[in-house]
Amino acid sequence: MISVTERKIFASDEDFIICNISDADRSNYVELHRQLNGKASLYLNPISKDMMWKQILDNADSVFSLFTGNGEYCGSIELQQPNSNTPEIGIDLLAEKRNQKIAPKAVRLFARRVYEIRKVDCFLIRISSKNQHSIHVFEKMGAVKIGEEETAFSRFREKFRKTAEEGGLDLEKFRHLFRESADEIVYCYSLNPDTFLHLQRL
Image (cartoon, rainbow, N blue to C red; front, side, top):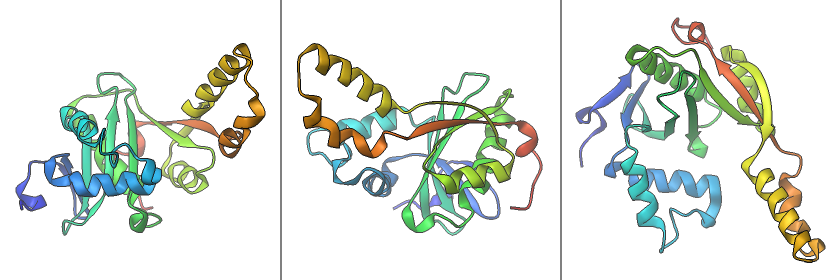
């Protein structure tokens, strides 16, 4: 098995190593999504798991694996809409790596490297309104809230409601499916260059 330091490194510092995702990361990435989505994860489904993994590898230039300096897998970083002047950064960490100030340090390292390659106006970060810890962390980092939007699930819920009503279905039978996320929204944050071009104490 190839060690992290033998792989092509996208960005690194004294604490972390970021590499483009590869086949060597599959088991870690699948476990990450099992923690995030439970057994319903498409990466665990016998029918879809290989197709889902192929899609990830096909986008290896925008999906990255995050490791500690000694090679421990921490999670995944994604760069969405990379050609935009406001590309979006998303980060997911394994449960045992959360609440250790890893996310802001890793995002700062990643953003700095992307900015070196191509100057952008800012980076967009989306955070669930229910994730108060991440909201606090990124606001402390200097991210500025610029708006709010519905979750993808909320949009699906509204579309389903309209379809169900038009079809004469009894919505009461489906209430339990939607109750848990009914009050969730997404906060949109802007991460400007001055928040990651200079080292800050966290």
